[in-house]
Length: 307
Length: 306
Image (cartoon, rainbow over the protein chains, first blue to last red):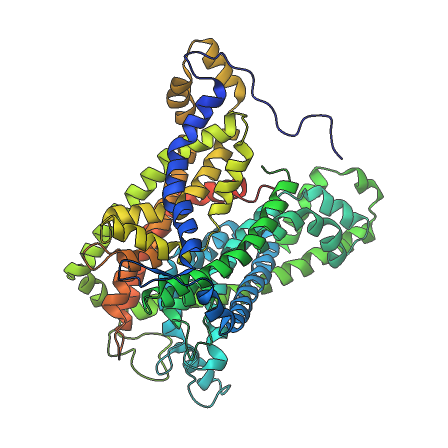
């Protein structure tokens, strides 16, 4: 498989005029970006990891070192519940849109008439602001006048309206459905892009040789899109693991904390409870888990010769 | 019938090596196969399409309904008394206009800042090889995955100590945390497509490295830079959590502004909220129509190169 050609083409050596070497020039180009990254991402992040060891009120200056108390507060308390709920949300809101997006991508890739138009149309849910997505589904799920209840009652599937977002049993499902609606178009676009790299001739040849559609899918299509699929799945997983907007607007972590995830718990602890020490302690534990995911992501992109 | 024959045509016009082996029976089976997959494809499009588009229909239908007509159960699936009143009500709401102006200002500055900074960084990553480059690239890539809610907690404290809460600066800087990584990677991907020979030629003609970047490479990459800028604009325009927390009524943008305006404690003004939601979506939808072309390319270059 591997060719003799180097993986990354070296740029031609360029004349170095002025005082700077090429390396120094290149670093100078990155300086404004690095300064921004340091100021708005890395410093706050490090400071967050540090703050977890203090008792601190968001509204007041000053803080007191409390060691591992904040971490113990979570580990002895809700940590496992929050982890479990975060995972339920993350897995659901990753797999569901993947299945829908993949099915749609496969369908559009068969060359249906108007598939370009359809692709554009289906992008709408992904394109509109997340908060609009939340408003819309809040209205659809509305306990008293919601269209979902209306349709289900009319069809005789349920006897009376259900407060989808207000019941512990259904709130998480409702949140997952909402997030699925917002992200399956992205999955579709990415997987369609992957599918379009599969040469048509391969399909035709396999078909000539008598391979049925299922066989062709696993023999021709899947090997070609496996790379894209694994990365969109992992990316979506990482994003959902820290997703905030949908849950916060739809349920705020309720009812009875049943849709509480790391994101909403950290936010509520800091901005409603003003306990920035506890918030960042939970955030630190959350970061640790995320780092494992990010490491996996980097590993995969690296292996694919992307960087 | 017409569709099956028309799609079978290319195979006839452009014979494959294996066509010689394909007998009449094989061809008939293939045609049946094609028809079957067509039907399956249409079913998938119909079912997923209903899930994808019926909520959009409901958004439109509610936005065009009178406030009284939506408060009945079961809801009327086809609204009868259509009105544009919910949209005109928006135009008369000064507070909403203020939110919209804030959104425009903050998202535009975010876009410009992100693109300028990311252009230099992306160019450096694309056209130079130096020690630490890969680590920096990884750092940029990884930073888009840090949890925003956690970042927000300490950003709030930082902005607070610098007296920057409730300023455009705080919003622009915090939005940049999630626009920059993708912009850098999108632009790196775009600079990768600029041939090295061009840079060499410029250098031989005596252009300095700055001049090469500013007057030769940047114009070539301009469409990509616009795409990255639009992307950053959209992300800034859409943000909810940072704008909600870091700014008050004076400097807040539309998404949190809509929550405070319409989500009432007892009864929400749904038709007006849906109308406002549509208005908020318009710039984003328009931006993405332009972006579509770059979207897949940029995102695959940025994070999912295959």
